[in-house]
Image (cartoon, each protein chain N blue to C red):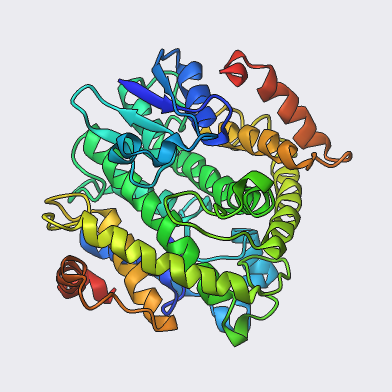
Length: 209
Length: 209
């Protein structure tokens, strides 16, 4: 099993943290996104959508998309469970993971990719040229800030995003907060729950993976 | 178990088709998105993100997000499996479901919500006022068209999106194609695989759910 990774990118970091929490050692192959290695024919054969992470199985099967890779690793190594211990908890973990993706990461990506100088003509991941929309970058920033508030409320009275147990939702949330710093979006000063939780999940050894 | 639904909206249709394929009868409560019922305090208590579908369990637990609801229903009613029969197949189904969401539905939503007259000030789902960006509507249209091409290639030599078996990815794909018609985006004439597949999945009784 081999993980096509990029040590500095947010999406593969989600898989690295997930694997670290389970004690899974993954062989990693670095893909140099800066020089455009994701658009080379060799990488396109692994993932025509030209993004990392990709998990390549020993039989050559390739799995892309963070959630698909994490669910696969969860099936192979159920302990400790990172999607919850019963059907209902699993639904809540998947729900929160999706909410953070849709209401957090999607807007964060909009904010970053539509403003970074190095991404002109690449406002969307993938093989097609897409021009930046500065107005969308600004909208993205506002939506990320609004979502910080949503998380602050969710974390009121909860140790982790879905309750008492650390889950995939915390991993996605952590990566969102740290990604937001790239464009100088910080958790609000008054967001005491969010800040307490961020300190806790950042202190876990997996956060360095 | 109760499904908060809107008979005309794309997202809850994904859950209705999923349940129909499994022969699950769900009690449905219609939420009138046109009159803004999703913003009323009663509905916000079920889902602060103000979107359908929401599955309410008998103990009052609420599950939102299509994928979370479908995975929960899959655990309760494993047959017929709609996420694949083994770990690897499940990863591929989840992967394709996510790809269609991210590279298809997200852009489709951008195209629709940033252009529909009735959605001025509501360019993003949820409780916050967000103005439309016409340039984003146009970008969304182009991305949906590009994704039709991606699906056309994927369906070459495959009965269904992930292979020989109908899965959640086909449901999400079907809903994407039909949603695209709202803004007059049709499958390209020459997309013979996509058109053959769309006819097949549309002919299943579940498509009317």
